[in-house]
Length: 69
Ligand SMILES: [Zn+2]
Image (cartoon, helix red, strand yellow):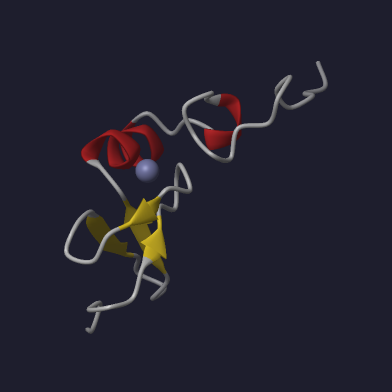
């Protein structure tokens, strides 16, 4: 696995992860998830939050997502 010199963006918040930082998760199907911090890791994997609903992520959608009731 080579991550040197390549920058990734966080799979959760969208922030760029510097080489050597962050966490990587390889799923059973081989897809990879990148996290800039334990905060993002926790939010996606444990809290299972939607990044589009969180204002501190780059993926946040202003006004939120419309959900049918
Ligand atoms: Zn992040």
